[in-house]
Image (cartoon, rainbow, N blue to C red; front, side, top):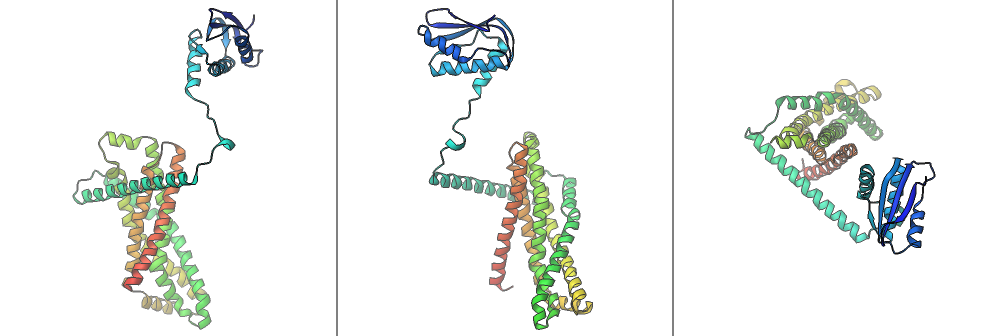
Length: 374
């Protein structure tokens, strides 16, 4: 039995009678058979189906029907699929609901330069608005915190403080000691030319307290904690946990963002002071171990070089860097899309944003301290 037969059911209707099994790999009719029948017969305005004798079928039948549908569209012929089985009818409707993607690859028209500039400008304005809105919400939340009207669990705050503080000590110790060693070696190369190796202590002490201690601690925390904040909040966004909090009337800014911001702002100055100390000890190891400097001389020179002003500048910088890292991580996490890929993008964007603004803020501090001569 042929899998398909043609019958002119009326003057303008071509009836396709389907029979037997329609399986991929078997000798099935092609859409060219239907096209030839339409071309050879009288004027056809409608194609219908009769599936009373249709046996088992698979994707082979659906592929044939999709091609018949496309043929009817090209020739402006009505397609009546009501005679098909319910399963075939629904699959055909689903295939029609997802249009084919066209004009991709090499045939894609390149967007004009002015259009690209306009799109980037609109995107930058939109992103700036979101940042300002987030900072505004965070400021209002801090004001509510001062009034004791926020919904935040103290246990969450203590846990995040531990993650941002004590758990970060090993990596901060390693990096800060290496930075102290590097500063001492780099300075010693030049100072040795003048027989002034004793000033290695001054170089390391001032460099660590004013610049490198806060800076390196901030970069470490941006890569470690800022990315973690973005990934945590992004995952909650994907799992719709943040939507659930909003449905329950709980502000995500108070419940999720505020503890993370407070923990990082509180811990960053302490980590910076710790990094300063470790860096000075690293420089001391180089000065005492590799050059003709005694431990007492190094300690006395460090004490002479340091003063409260240098230490406070580093502490204030660390606090500002902590705000930048917390805002960057939480903002990117709250902006995360609804897929696992977007979580990765959010974490990466949080690190990049934090590091860029840390460098910018450090440059502004350098200009301000130079103008104020401190």
